[in-house]
Length: 423
Image 1 (spheres, rainbow, N blue to C red):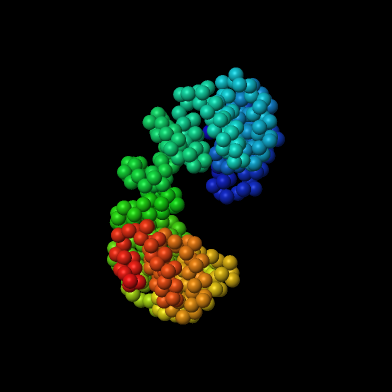
Image 2 (image 1 turned 90 degrees about the vertical axis):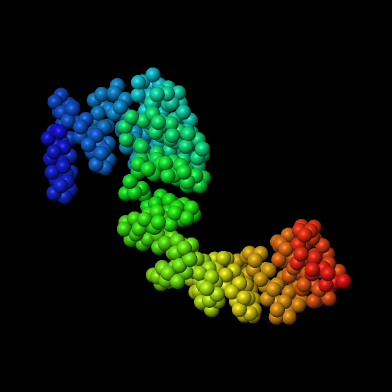
């Protein structure tokens, strides 16, 4: 290790940043190309490794001036420029390297990184494929292509390149990253066996929190509750606001039939963070499972208060209001939502049912007619609409609605029985 690097490391250990910059400035001011070249090379790479990009850039720029034929320095300089968002400058220095250069595949990789940073994923892919054609045995190119295609959401192709990389790789450079992406792809495809295979030799501590949460969700779906609980516990240890982990644990408790414990967990979440929207629906279903409709009503009212822009929240509130025969309140909830330009066909259907029970028949007829545009194939809606039309004295229209339902489900005994009442 060179003397300058030892001195910089010592200053960093002592947290003397001013001293660090003094050492850098002193080195560059006293630099002698005849005797300090090797030290400059070490300093350039060391500075890059510790995140001192400007100092590393200065060193590599000097190296490109001293050894203009050494393309490795130009490529490193371009990578630093890309890191700094200096895309035009990076392209400019890279174009000076001819395609006959031994490091030209690395030039193409650098260009691909540049275009990927700018969002031109198709151009980046072409650059990497060109590099692969030149250097087909370069294993890292499989990883770069797999990672790029993963970002482009071309998951089947990404999987192919990543698996190829893992089969051919000889070191651990990108192994964990490749496995993590393959795990995510397997999660998205709900391929539980592939997930398990990739996780066998991966430590939980190596997995980022979002992936832990995805895995826990998958384990919960497959009823591996103990493993899911372990993953959520890891998230709780590392996350300052682990609402998703607490929510996941509440889901597991609900799935295990421990409704009271799930309720307590969700109450704690909503008490600390009433804007955590997902918790409301799960808690609402907990209350319905216990037939505690008053608690469900109170919760739905609170949800609409905190997230008034949520159509689902309005639907839950109007639904429980109608269930409790608070039809006036339900209509007010729906009309307010419509005034605020929140729309869902379920609200139209609910309004029709409420007006029907309130004996506001003209308004009910209007709402049922509108709802029929969305629920014309729903047997439940057809039953409600036909009964309303019959009670409203429109027997022929009711029969037409029933007959339509029977064309959809000819053996539906509820419709057959309802039709028989018209004889």
